[in-house]
Image (cartoon, rainbow, N blue to C red; front, side):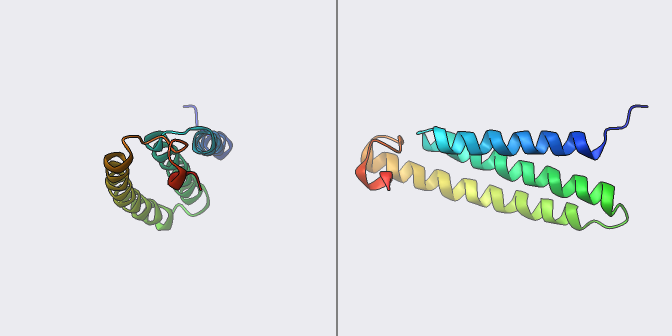
Length: 104
């Protein structure tokens, strides 16, 4: 049986994190920026679960933090989508660079 080490899991988590950071800084569409933030949060979840599994297998602290982050991310996504819909109604665009109010 081929075991996956913590190094491989942390590599995947780091790659997800930097893909999310790249998407957050290079995209102009608010929906894709929201998806990039979700990627960052999921990379943190992978870190919590992997460190919990390899460092403290008898405890469930990392799993509890992950469940909490998933709940917070769902609420954040709902609020962000509501804000994006409101911005679209006012400006007819969700492009960050289209409006002067959204630039800064």
